[in-house]
Amino acid sequence: MNENIDELDDYLCKQIEPTEGESVKNEHVMREKVTINPERRKLLRIVGIFGKDEKQLKEESGLNEFFFKFHMDFLLKEEFMKLEDGIYRLKDTGIAMHDSVC
Image 1: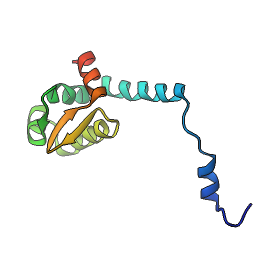
Image 2 (image 1 turned 120 degrees about the vertical axis):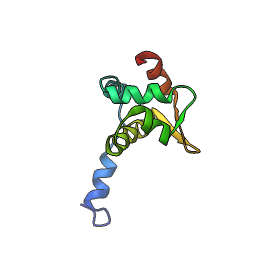
Image 3 (image 1 turned 135 degrees about the horizontal axis):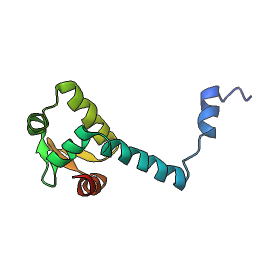
Image 4 (image 1 turned 135 degrees about the vertical axis):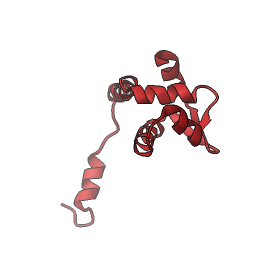
C-alpha cells in the first residue's frame, strides 16, 4: 500500500454512490418508517400545510420531550420537514406523505 494513503482514505475511495435502484429503495424504506408509525403520521398531520411552532406541536401531539425530539429529528433528517424561522413546515416529501396518510 502507498505510504501516503492510509486505510481510511483507501476505504473512502472505494465507496461509490448508490445506484438509482438503491436510492429508490432507500426512499421507500424511509416512507414506510413514517407511515407505520402513528406518532410520525400525527406530527405530519398537525404541521399540515400552514406549519406550526415547537410549542404548538408539543401541545397538540401530546408527546413528551424525548419522543418529540426523537420523531422530529427523524422527520427533519429524512427531509419530510424543515425548520424555518422557528416554524416547522412540510417539505415536498412531507406534503406527499401528508396527502397519502392523513
